[in-house]
Image (tube, rainbow over all chains, first blue to last red; front, side, top):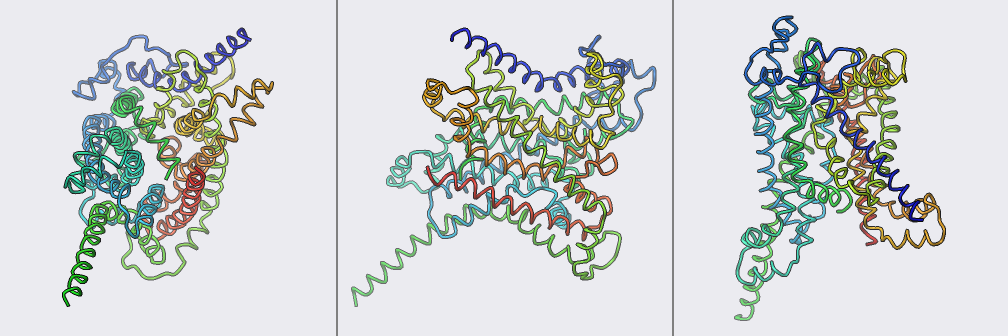
Length: 297
Length: 308
């Protein structure tokens, strides 16, 4: 019996290694590709580990210094050069838009969710299901009207416009997660605070919020990941480096047939750093938030 | 007289309190409701209105055209193609994603040393931008110097490089595969949470009854996972119907129209030809279909809630 258990564990461990490899392989490949020169990468088959790793590609994107390996052979074509140089701006725009959306979520979702969790009023159920249902409407189906609406507000090609769209798309999820979280807190503390003369907002601020930190962390992580990575709206509402976010920039570089693969790889690596850090730091809250929000109302 | 006043006063007072409470509720919800309505109700209503008018960016005037936009959209040969592609995509990717998630969850549920790391890794494909994942896989699947071909060639599985993204069937399979790679973490996490609520005694009892591993899964575990399973199936259908980013960076709908999913068709009809009327007609069709699925989803989630 014990022997069988041991064989089983070995099998599980092997399966675990396979799963880990399937997950990690693309990440390792793109990291390795970003550290090579183009001529190495297009060998058949491509080297799995960069034979002579170089950070020239990264330096080019941040400083504009053309890597020696390219300058000599003129592999780096003009259009691409300009495109990839937008990557740092795109990272900054994505970051600003994501943080803006997180702040909107923290304020508005907290207010709304606390009401849903504790107040009884007519229309509550309807309002709640309206908000929840709207979360799943696909972007493509609402894209045109939103484009036209933003245009008439003069918010095309602006970070503010993106923050508005992303807030509308993330708030339903945040409200759902936070409402569930607030409901799980003991109501007695709040009742005591109200008896002591606190208003609802004071109770929310001084009693509920300190207890709700994990819920707040979860919605911050979700809204950050969503708005940092969103593609469709960013694609057709932005035009210049003023508001273009990182997914738009790396997508436009990558569909350019002249693009250098190593520089594309650098863009991908840079685009993944912030989301991965966020996902790892907030992992626990993301997991519990996801499970609660998808399986409960 | 005096008593009457008191009653009236009491009533006013009581109503004042109630109003205050209702007022607070709606004031705190107003910003959210407004934003969400502006970005969902308004667009859907606007799409419905636009879809019965001519609305082409390069043409002047917006005359009422009845259902002609719908007719034109449906008569476009790409319409039927895109519906077929979307159905294939949903029919294959939803079971693949669900099964992959279930298998990974069953694996992670085993107490093996080192699986803590695996639990962290599982979140990675889901956390990065879809665009980044798609481009990475496009490089990996490249028909001339892709690492996938390189690997298969090196181990002798293939004699010549496969053109993954230039062959209609393989391109569809590739989009599904990449979608599954990115999407499986969600069901895996949900199933794992479900598995962890199953008391180990149940499985233990079945083991003592000499049930095989398969029987224990089939008759003990699976029935208890029914709730999460239904939710995952409906949710992943909604996700699969909405896929857009991946098609954009992986195949651009091609080769030909092999990976022109319905959402991609809607996008190109609108933004490539700037025919907002026709685009709106397609958007409205898509919104209607999705609203049905969303209603089913909410129902499934609620049904699961009620017994507990």
